[in-house]
Image (cartoon, rainbow, N blue to C red; front, side, top):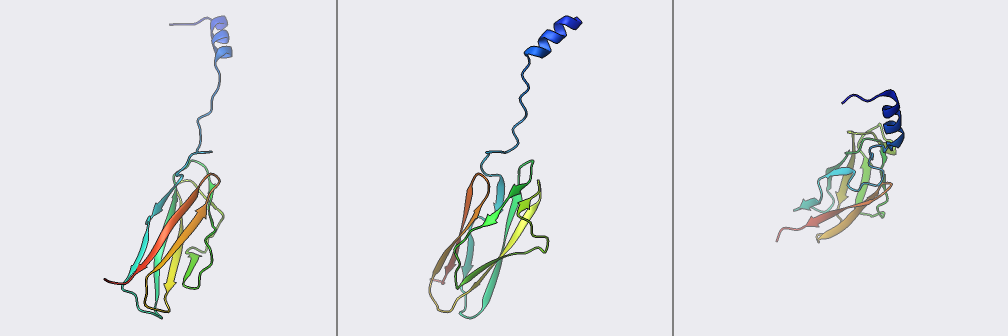
Length: 130
């Protein structure tokens, strides 16, 4: 169907432009691997490490901040020398979780990371063999 110039102008003036949403308030903007960190059969005094990765699924850069409570048994550090507060689209931010026990008993810790719209919690469990 061909439109005249006047018909096209009228049609375009009635059209409302709605930009595609770009994850502004979308939850689960990051894919977290692994969802749970488990250390088993540990020996007191020996350090154990695990890597935690956050992949930005959004089309824009998103901030990611670690707000976990300090602990004498756990440390969380950024694995890359290219640390930034924002993670680019399709890129990952990697953290190293280090655990060193002083005694032989079960431990539990929760890592907490925040973005603009959500809080991400990752449990860290240290379990002796039963």
